[in-house]
Image (cartoon, rainbow over all chains, first blue to last red):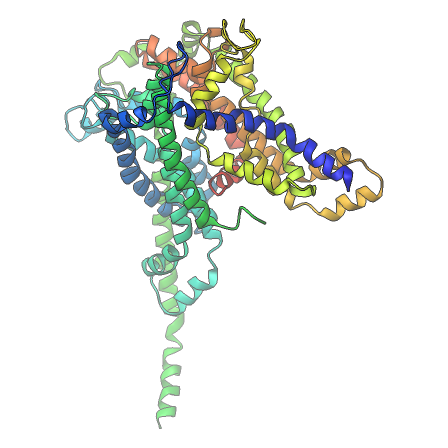
Length: 288
Length: 311
């Protein structure tokens, strides 16, 4: 069918051109630019691997990478654990579970900038900040949550945990729909307790979902920017800086485009590897 | 003998069974009540930051000035919203974000459903390659393309005083083009719409062709009406990402006329000397529209978000 062929091209072409211009070409340009010393003002000159060599020596970059790793190592498992418990609890057919689900998911639909503002106020150093009121309730001294170098990163991680529970819970809930009731009935016949069923039926059946949530959450964690920008500006003394924030600083405050793109290429490699892993696990959805 | 024994044993046990079931039922019921209370408490903790936001936004200034104001505001004072509007043009910010969200809904639905339909239902040789390309672009994080995209906007030829080589002017910086064009369509919307189109019956297309209907009419009038839930899902996600976007508008605009709500909020915070009541009023303005939209169209949001996780 010639008309079908023609319309196939015609209908996909606008989107195809759009993604080539705004994603395809930028990726190629970014990789190319990472081997230059481009600074917007002067024409770029070839710099070889100088940017990558500098990254290796850049303590702040390693600090940022370490912070991303810490956020992933602590934030993701805690958030996943809470989300799993919430999902199992919401899968019991209790009254008002739709209402609970809505409340738990709300942080996910809210703009991260707005969330940062709310937590800025919760973490406010003056005693009327909510976090310090909570400390005061237990007779503890108020803290400067976001300006104390030891507390700032944990404080940011708490926000990512809170914000991340909703989506993880939804994916777990979707996965729980696929767990056959017969398995639980068989466990009932064997006299298994609720706890035993949770560990011996639910957890193993949710293993693919768990792995998937883990990888996609790490990917999302590596792209944290709005929160850090608005909550701490990466401070104090780079205590909460992350790779995306370093890219922003290098590119749009120092105008070191070559150096910034080299950092973004490293981020790209990390995330593409993680994405391929997650797609392997889910499998099947690409084809069909 | 042994056979007889077992039979009597079973008969002995039988009457006991209902009693056991009853106590098991009761303990299960208690378990469910405990679970329900735990869920309620957990949900309250999850929404506490939003509650705190609202309470601060309506707290009378005199109360906020107290060293330890009560958790619940004594009176609700909506004057803070008026003062926030006086301190910063939140109306303009909200209008700009709304325009971006609305325009993206239109462009994403048009371009996305065109591509999604073609990839799902039309047979042409490059189809699989194009689909693989879209899937590949979904892997690329925004932070890997943001710098060249910014430079492309900045050096856009023949715009904003630029010559044909993109030199001499500002390009698309501080224009609606910069806010609207790069996000006009995305691979994820195409992918999601394609998944919806795949579920529609191909026989319908073949029958329509036999009736002599043209290809665009089949796409728009026969098949697309069948995937209304898919269109709504994609429209909501497009509006959400337009309304909640922060970094891109921050980079490509600096004039107050084009400032979007999230950037406006961020700038307001830096300039407002942490007047928490005003900041929370502004925050509520930026957060509440999405929350309300979510409450109304939950099912579609959930649909889209779960799919975005499982892409």
